[in-house]
Length: 113
Image (tube, rainbow, N blue to C red; front, side, top):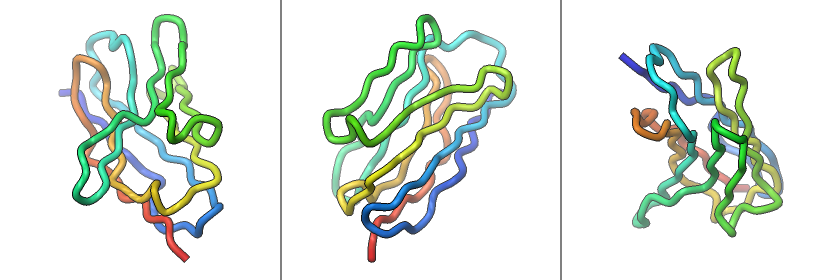
């Protein structure tokens, strides 16, 4: 059974940084893309970042371009989301997702002074 486990969330001050990790286990298929989504209270879930496992193409939501970086360590089956210059609009539950597969359980990121 494929399982995704996120870590690295928490409380950070505006302007600060966090790195989220998503560790995959039990993979038995090739996922063609890995994603990070987020969902803020009262809002729909939105895609934040995508990394292709075919050619490593990176895609970002306009709201995080230049601040967030998605990456992957194939040897560790782990996907990362480096988040810099965080602001209150980034407060949300963040989810990782493997295309064609499962979602992580979600991890809270709160940006507040």
